[in-house]
Image (cartoon, rainbow, N blue to C red; front, side, top):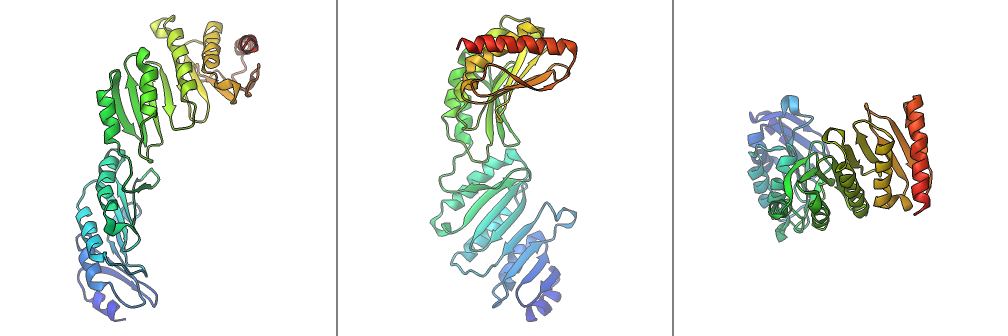
Length: 334
């Protein structure tokens, strides 16, 4: 009760919750650390100190939990918390005094710099018992340790690699543009061999109308072979009549001809067969044309497609029959 009475008379404390098992105080962001230092340490009543966040309380918070554990680094961790508070790219911090430090940043562009900053703490032997993590509002918490890989070495690789025309990060995905299709395979293989932070869900590498993904699922070679077949096919087509290709991480191969016809169907089948993944994995193929013409799936090693979606027009039915016949002919000879 002494804590409640003292806090009630403290102009820096805006709200106080106290019962027999815990105490929670609210104050301004600037006073969080000082208030915690002054009010923590009540026997049998761990303290939580939170900053007032007003209308942003659901998405922005700055909190220190005393918890029930005791450790020797309390003062040092509070000092680190205090140093993080003014950072404009941080929207939330939660410090469990002897257990964890969680930092929420504004967006993906702030992620790598914050991971590097927090990694300095994770590398400090004094904090070996603390779990560190960084996240964005739309991403999962990314655990940070002394050995956590960073994006800077990967970006340095992109800058140094001939044929990499552009790169960017959005929604935990790295997008890489390749200028020359002749370099596509070697660039994809080089990038795939590099370590990358766990918060990066995939790397998507593209050239012109074609892109593949890298996420460690073992399909890279098949994707590259399919992409190279599409490069060759598009070289025979007019600039305004090329077929786009995008490999999806769910195993779906998406093709987007400007105008689908039997020739486009044959080129798509040839590209899928060149990839080789169809021999061991189910192969869903989506063909988009105003905006979707059909989706078919071939079971692993199958010589025929099962139609899963179609606009059911007579012309599409005819084209699907021709596609199935060509698929059966080509796979039957493999």
